[in-house]
Length: 290
Length: 283
Image 1 (tube, rainbow over the protein chains, first blue to last red):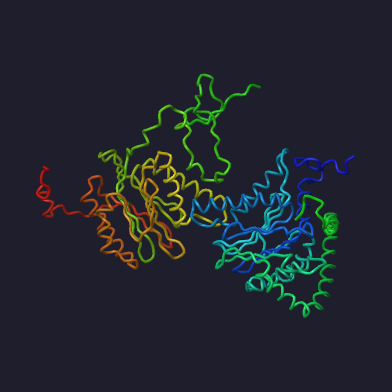
Image 2: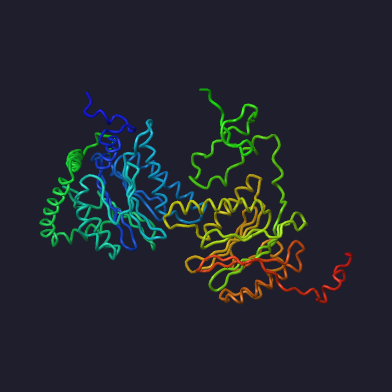
């Protein structure tokens, strides 16, 4: 009756040493639209593709400000993301009230990860179905963290998650060495290029994406619509020049990536399958909208 | 198996409650944390469950017993100096003569206390717990002097709101990112920062001297000399002080607290000869 007899419960191990419910929760992140985070020596940037469930609706927000010095991009279950967002805002406010200073990013990310871990070890709970990219700036400089539904958290130079994010990752992997010294404008452009790569068909417009920037000299700022338009225009201008080169490169990159994943045993195949499934599902059928 | 109540009472100790000891309502577990309470450090803000359950409010914490007198603090060019004597006075009895009233919080910060010394020990326990947490996190973050100052302000103000104040005036001294920090917190949560500070009697005796002689870019030697002078004046006029002082310094190199020392005094001043002459009606 069941395809897999070990995936009914978060507290059940499979004989191979896996917990399928956690892996399924991680798949939920891939159903959401793509989000990218990257940092230079001074700034951190978030960029997301927004989806609208129908032509009549507005685009769903994917970037949330947590405090003046940090914000998150979410992918997966929006409802879970908003709960975590509220928790993080609360913690930051408490920290400001008690210590009169902004909360260190690493500390908050760790608390969120601890919270997520509880959902993976209690029979009456479920893991969160959302991935968070946390971008911010504190005493030790700019940071990009990724919070996974499994309760893991990672410190990144640049990261992408969500549907077709492999293309964005490939772009980031090719470019990340230039990020450390990049200016804020360049960083935003890199973020948009990465997004463009994971936007399979369709144009990147100021309507369907949003960007946020934060640094030591500036509070967390959301760029949308009119304030984002100049950046979109700028990468559109660069495109014709780069297009020829990029296309050839892109094809090669995809070949590389596929080879790499194939080498990584069955897991990689499954990933690709799932991504393919995610690509087909544009509509608003599931509660899993983002 | 029968459920046996478990005690976390300091009086009975941990573990199952012996059948003879009848745990009153005070033993019943209070929810430790409200849903929105901060995930650490909230103990400082909690009401003592015993204070809620007994029929009379507890009163022995409402007035200080063993007290310390003034703490002085000044900033100088590359750091902060704090100084005070080492007396823990029981009323006007000089009961404990080597009590360290200047304590290190971490490498960039220290605290000095006047007022009830047991409350100060409790406050230091709170700060040590925070420092231990920082150490355990192992991420390089530690409390900055301004954060310690803000935290203590919150703790003291919360306790006064519960009508159970921590009976202290605290001075926080620190040095971080190239800047000295000096701030004070009163027992009801009043707080401010300044280039030079004193608590209690020192506000009247030492501050005038500091206002006259202090300038922000003074050298360490000048600052120490000014501090000695202030300590001496406080010792001359404050009967609850002794001639055994400690001087603590925070600079970029960290916190150092001196061994106790005495200052040379001279009681032969003319105005000391017949103190009653200037105060008609005394003897």
